Length: 466
Ligand SMILES: [Zn+2]
Image (tube, protein in one colour):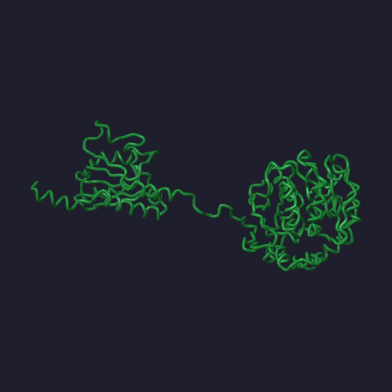
């Protein structure tokens, strides 16, 4: 070949980087098609004669690697299964199959981008091209644009930013925006979505303070409240160096909300709380209960008494089904049935005239429309009414536990303006709790005693010695 011919060849040839860029473009097309992004081109005399991109999924062909696809096309274009004088550019170090095919085709050069420590046989796992028995003419160059080629693969395999926490089809999730900027509720949400009793539902848990704190105040709310109800008490306990765990029952607050009323069963809610306590491994617990927080919560400690050190009990009851439900409660139950779209915030303000519009809005926040309100409809009729009502038997067991077996300290606070679960009901409960001292009376507090909770929390801290 003349000197002039050599010059011409030089002019026609691609640099390795140029060749690799063409292969990268093929890899990007593979990624766009949902295939592992590997691309290849075959170049002869400075001309791209074939391209290939990884396509085993689309072509249902395990051999459809970028290199094999490109080699097949090149052979077809040249009308020859020998690809002498050709250079193959590929973005990833070739595997054994592709390397074998290239050796059979006798390509002059293989230029690859990123090394493949898992299946690469051009030097990584082994070097097929380095065996003189197998290879007589193919040269190998690796590491051309290796970073770009590798990044494309990394991006492809990076976990997709899909919603890792999908909401169950039969449930709703109140948008986060509904809870933005709530007064006196600065705490970050924590979510638990693997409780066996409520598979697929996400429960919100306020969890502040350290796990090794001397006491953990486990605060259980009732209907129609959520952990917001404890906002005046939480800071007192955190300031004392304690931990506070305040879940939102399923159907309330920031927890998922099943669409159907029939989801709500006494035993399901009880078990979800037991699961949560196990899941968080709570120890040195002071159980804090009011309303449904107590109807459910007072049945919990007998399942694992060693976890509990104390009880802070406010306007609630054990619904054992042995005595008729009070007139006050029946009136409330009727009222809920007659006013299915009642304004939750207004209800809270009724017993707490000083409540601000923003605080009222915080109580309405979990329920943007009636689709979210299944729990509000389901809870009042769920209070065990008869001896054989769901929850009544376990409540009777709990009654026996508190009367005979309870070893912890107790602190009782009573909002005296409560017509449903006020002083008469609480005095009876007091008589059923072993070692329950004279209660703290709050003459101005209504049913939602926690709205005057700072004083109660402070008294309770003094009462409970870790
Ligand atoms: Zn391959």
